[in-house]
Length: 164
Image: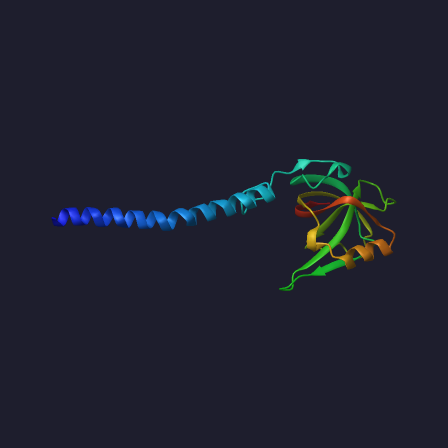
């Protein structure tokens, strides 16, 4: 065999080896990006487009929503995560409603409410998620002790924009 043929064979083997390594790697990376995109409703690093939705209509099938409602700060609830991040948790009710105690939307945000405010009208753009492990039994107990009830299928809203 000549040197040219040996070089061609070496290149073919090298390209097959590279394809054997990069193929599965790319499949895993693209699968992970697709999973995050499906879960959040937007590509990684971006927020989903917020769609105006009524609080009573929000379900776990929604992703990006724009909600107008009244925040209830009657229960001052904070959650400290590993690493020291603090989040405030409060229910969001229909705008102007300060009497209802049935929670369909629970908001979790790093934005602290003002000190002397009990109710506040807000417009929130955020990502809707099932509460999962972020809403622990002690959080539910504290709200229920103050007279709030959680509706079946209530959602957790993680805001990326709050006005009000």
